Picture 1 (cartoon, protein in one colour):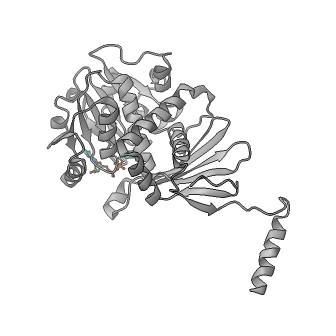
Picture 2 (cartoon, rainbow, N blue to C red):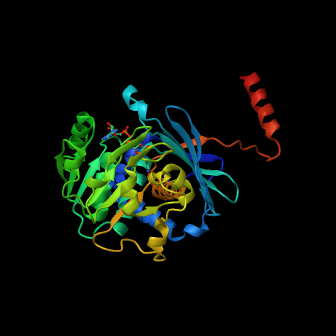
Picture 3 (spheres, rainbow, N blue to C red):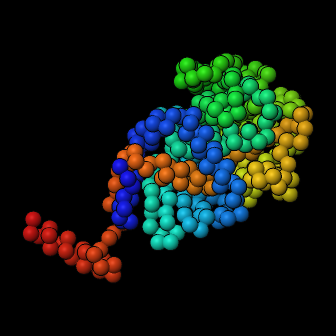
Amino acid sequence: MSLPSRNAVVPFVSVDNMMRLVLHVGIEQMMVELAEAIEADFHRWPQFDKTPRVASHSDIGVIELMPTSDGKHYGFKYVNGHPANMRQGLQTVTAFGVLADVATGYPLLLSEMTILTALRTAATSAMAAKWLAPRDSRVMAMIGNGAQAEFQALAMKAICGIEEVRLYDLDPAATRKCTANLAGRGLRVTQCETAEDAILGAQIITTCTADKQYATILTDNMVGGGVHINAVGGDCPGKTELHRDILLRAGIFVEYPPQTRIEGEIQQLAADHPVTELWEVITGSAPGRTGAGQVTLFDSVGFAIEDFSALRYIHARLQGTGLFQELDMIADPDESRDLFGMLCRAEAAARVA
Ligand code: NAD
């Protein structure tokens, strides 16, 4: 089934249809394709409107809007982060988003983005690791085995060739869940008792924990030379995962510095501490890893362009699948200025019925 031709009908991708689309494409294949879409947009980074996301904080979480545009399309994501939700059986992170046509301002797509965020975050992590991690990386540590974890591990397998994932979470039930979900997916899975144990022999260390505080998941003495750290969980003011001393000796790579300086691990550093923008590494205008002994850190917070790429990818991938519903979301009077007349005709029709 083709996407609707009438502008006023907006295709909507529900959670159910997103899952069908992921299974139709294949989970790993979709993350490979998403990483390609994100990398292509990082290549044309200067073309985008960029702003740090608009955040509304409370004591227990944050609700954020993440807009961007390339002049042809506009996209935004609504996303929350509520670490305490998990204890009530709710997701820490939920999201939905819109892609729109800049020429008319009409929406082209409304989509669930809770699953899509997990996929795009994992694809972005693996894209960064492809550019920054040691070439022969085969072992990753996955610290924090919550909702994002399996996606992170499988993207590193599909894009970077990771063969073993070493799991650790404060809550052993999370590690058991992650182990069971990864069974039979081509990764050697090792459950670890401590974070120190998890990083043994790992060339890539991913931290993806959720806590609304300055946490210290990794201390400086735990981190040997030459590893790549992918710090995903610290993504809010007052919410970090790494000891500051690690940052002081690492080569730090970020998405959009004005946002990362507010939200990322580098909020612990001086405002002028040097960082490299990942898009510059991808376009070849800045170096990535500079030596085998260097610790590289991708201080991931999640940037609007990644969601924009993901929404455009889904919009293109939907073609011919029928995996959407048509939403009557935009008022569409026969004569564009006669919005009130449309209401009058509905009133008259209701009287007759
Ligand atoms: P989740 O609540 O499902 O899982 C978090 C896990 O971390 C839990 O299993 C918890 O037990 C564990 N944990 C908490 N403190 C720990 C500690 N000190 N040591 C080890 N484990 C610990 O959350 P999620 O959806 O997997 O998200 C994880 C984090 O990633 C959140 O902080 C979220 O905001 C962030 N996130 C970032 C991006 C990005 O683009 N950078 C995208 C999505 C989510």
